[in-house]
Image (cartoon, rainbow, N blue to C red; front, side, top):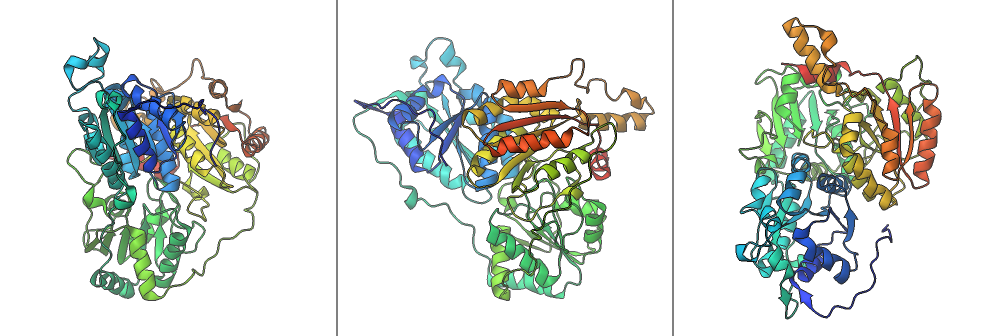
Length: 585
């Protein structure tokens, strides 16, 4: 479904420029949208997108901040597993976007990021401003957390770099690529349109298939395991792959552990699902891992950390690691986590390995089928204050009869309330734990889900929302249905938890933990901020009694096509697993 806004007047081209070739190459790469905040360093390319391509294929998504542009592309990729294009203005735009790029890197999502620099030839720079927008090695700002970068010096090289960037970002393990165009190349006139690389002749490489020997080695271990456990981490959104995961677990009677950092990977109501998903392991998940004689990690984020949380001693069980992660590790970013033990490591994508195992075993459809009967209606919130738990229950009640996709949940969310029966039921966190990513990623995911019949819902913290609130303007401008519920505790509560831990360790007043953390005096009118972006807004909601009615109205408005924000004042609090995991050590 493509919106019809921002269609420019028809333009008859009398002369071609370098940026026209770059724009046409971008169209060839197949991205339907390009997210950007305008900048003079790519004014030529902007003109070509408008007047040569007619702002279609790709269509520009105007963003109010470069960080939002990358976050929107990130959210899009979490749904589609395909790259969206982003254009960033010179070095200053790239610096604005750096945090969002780190999130996308850590989350292993594909993204085509393009930038621009002032004239590399110093003699062609305008006084002052071109010098500020020119850097010698622009990608050095983000090189540790992009997969590949280039700063080509000619049009032919620029087109080749775009093609290379597309194949690299689509190759597992996926992450953003960055290409920086010289403004002089964009604005140089052309005598004729050059030949453009053909994406059909430059398909993305695939990792080698699973060998018979490796498949047999893994099957042999699974066959003799008495208590196998699968750690299901970064896997695909495909429904068929989802069913194959279930069938493999059922065949071997393997307990399955999932988490909230990554998207839905296994049905939470399945009898083999062990413990509640969380940012850290629940007690039931730790017990299942501790009792395992074989742990198979399917691209789990931090498998060594999971074994440590479960108290698994070195050599206490066999460990198999199925992941392409070693191909992505570098010396700057430590997002590769601690070095996990492994008796067998398969450098492969988990769903491909599971597919091979299922085929060798002759597995068919899983025995488990989702319970389509509606979940029991939660009890009406009681007491004088709304908690995150009562908000979660009320939100679940308001979504009965819809097909929601939870795009994000707060750090304070209780994983025991997760009810995931489809790979699009939940999309995971942001990868790099960079606060402010939530609104932009929600917009990108909701855009990707538009027309799918799913209701996009994001449960965000107030700090996350406040840092990224202006991302909502892009959603309202493009009429993207989206429901954002803000669990507003009026504090950077995660840091209050840390300050409490420090105070207790040092014998200092716990009562002072709010100083420098509380977002009060004055309270911020989140609903007013949302309305300022063109969203439908409700709140602040402070009474448990009024919460169900407000959420029902918000869901109805979202189903009618609106971007909706609900400000809910909640009492601060974390689950025990989260508080312990965040402050341990």
